[in-house]
Image (cartoon, rainbow, N blue to C red; front, side):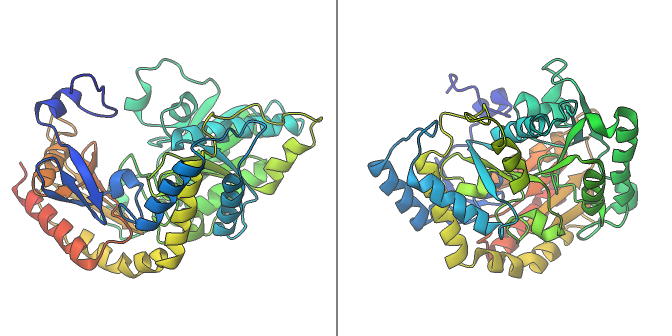
Length: 430
């Protein structure tokens, strides 16, 4: 067990008492001791349709026996093109093109490179500055951690990319604690983009990237009107707006994307996770037609010097096509929408429990913020995580925030079990 250096893990603590999952089906895992574990996190935000969906399993199994790999550098295979058309239809044709990657991190770095190259192709090469947001999470590539705003992800890696600035985050416990849905306070924080434009000049800024709902930092929900204001300002100043929908895409908000939920259209979207129901690693960047078309005016030859060996991998494409079919045939979004109010009621039933200082939810996402133990930040939530797993429930924690994001195929009985066990744990938590 010692040979595996585990990602984003307290390796020493884990290996002293391992939590090993050996199978999954529906909304449950099974651990190495045969115990059933209710999946309150859709794996890692990435299994919206539930585990071991027969149609997805069959599609991957068939593809691996038919076409195990095909290059997409100066070559192609039909499934990649079929999927691209289906994905554009899934966006209701609000986007025109898709560029395949293998993860959300790669999708973010791809989108940032596209933004820089787009402005250069249009004759504005001075637009090189990238704007992220405090507490933002955009994966672990150097581009992603540069525009990201979580200190722990940045501090070990030096100065990162130059020419990056950050908008303030929108989290305000004093004004917005225990808000149900979008908070009222904070839309004005989008106007901080005007201050950044005044500091650097719009002619130097390529793109703004934000998560519509910040997930990995602990479920930070945008104030009412905030995203629309960002859209207005980016349009005003000729800045590309990128939504990082790696977490919020593919039904997490009970709509295809958060862009649909908030009725705001970015110029690019990064996606991954639910794109293949977590079955095969895959990410993608969706772009508006004008972004793509700017590259096509170049002299004949390769328009964008960028790509990955596994871009549009046949197995991933097969998994994604099957995932879209499951969404449609099983009416996953309708089912999720029908659970929203019940889910929210369950979340806010925890109000008043010891150490709970905020509750927030939107779509089928929830954040439960706990008061930190003095001198031991993150310990209270991490203890809750371990107790929950021992009690047959998988939750996710970040700092002292519990983040929940169940498979969209949860039923009310699963919500009752999840929050019943979590309430007991919180009542008894030191």
